[in-house]
Image (cartoon, rainbow over all chains, first blue to last red; front, side, top):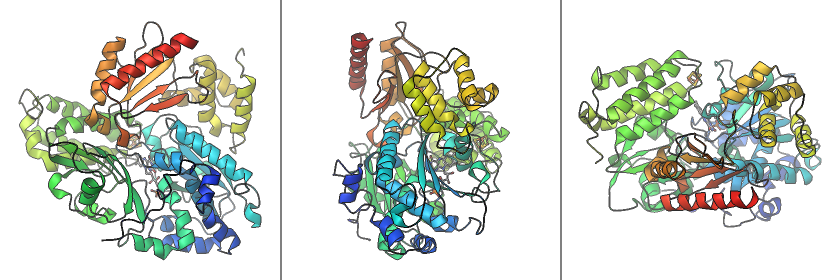
Length: 426
Length: 172
Ligand SMILES: Cc1cc2nc3c(=O)[nH]c(=O)nc-3n(C[C@H](O)[C@H](O)[C@H](O)COP(=O)(O)O)c2cc1C
Ligand code: SF4
């Protein structure tokens, strides 16, 4: 197993001043920016290091950041934008908030380096509206960095100009989807646009735009300082570096743990989070936010990387696990999830708008032991009508977990059919 | 037009609009600002904001009604928001919500007769590691108009309500 003691974003978390500029700099902060701008690292060189790092996007899809940056047009008259996705809202996920509240300068330094690499002079950080403390700390970090000359004109005498602005969301999960986020940032309802064109070609204000997650960018300073290969070596094949893993639910020590990509799920749950909170054994786990199909307790000997989870018919998602114990009714849990997607559908596509409500209504019936016309096959068929038939991936995100519950807990679901009550919970 | 920003809010407005290449992009932050100033986003406030930003009223309305954080009608002094999504569901968020509904004698999204509390069931607050979580909006608090209360129990949520009630009693 890899060295589990290396830390990057959480290394100095015990310093209560880490969120201030002086705190961050006392631990070598902004060393990556100095190395790039004063040490003669060209934008191309920074981009190469990020590519070599195998840094996979931490927003859920795991797309390699270096490759995404390469999709920008080589020549353009238009400004290029960097947009940070800080809309953290996927149920079960609570990692970007930690970075923004406790280590916001790592994000700011990462934004500056990314802007340098993609030749952007303007970055917006779209922060979920409810995360007020995150907004405040990011805004303060920007002000401090500007006062120190890290943001603004001619940064560190390099000739590089760059502005970073915080932008508050206003309560809509769908704005985490990158095209909805761009619409929202333009002052419109957060309704996803069709892709293509992809944001790298036609994004914010019609200009080439890169959208990256908070955590993705916060790792960039370390990569620039220590080299892409060194970062890649910390993780596993095709999944470079470390990640913030979350564990919540029925475990003894819920929280965030920074560990390499590819770490065994069992280690995270049992060693880090201390295993189950009481004597009741584990029943299952939702691996990376509510859109990921659940795994059974017997399946946790799995490496936490994008490919392994996919092979298990699930997804790594945001890397924040929700663990639940025996006695939890998976129909009721899924019903809560289905309620969420019905509530958050933006309503543009019929399969999503109607399908999410239809799914929720029927799972709710099942929850109470009612009979379903067509049995569990009805739920399958609703999922199949949504999957792949919508503008954005929210539709898939609503259908996939339900298919997963049916696959893993089908017997329990079948036992609800016509039972007149929930056969699991007393 | 009868509405106007205070001097402070006007300064904030100028700062915000300077961040974008066009005025419409400032709509979300300016609606937040207006809600903080005027209490809720009434049709009059929408017109005011639309006028400031040169955005037609219908577009302001589309935005104000799309996002959950804009209150289209007055809410209580404290907007108490209880998460019941997966991590909070597993750790007692539902029980807390039920208790508060009884304690305050309101249904979901209801406001107490004295106008002190509005209670609402909400979606994941990104506090799953410290679940269950409650968010409390207090527009009178200039420092922390939105505060999180984490690792809650029925008892601690009950005590939280009492603390807020006392706060409302002491400074109105
Ligand atoms: C419905 C939906 C919600 C999403 N929510 C988020 C989110 O809250 N934060 C995030 O970073 N990405 C979210 N994403 C993924 C983004 O669309 C996008 O892939 C990501 O921000 C890209 O950044 P990355 O490559 O650094 O991961 C969401 C996607 C969908 C379909
Ligand atoms: S899939 Fe759902 S959320 Fe996405 S664009 Fe269509 S209706 Fe909106």
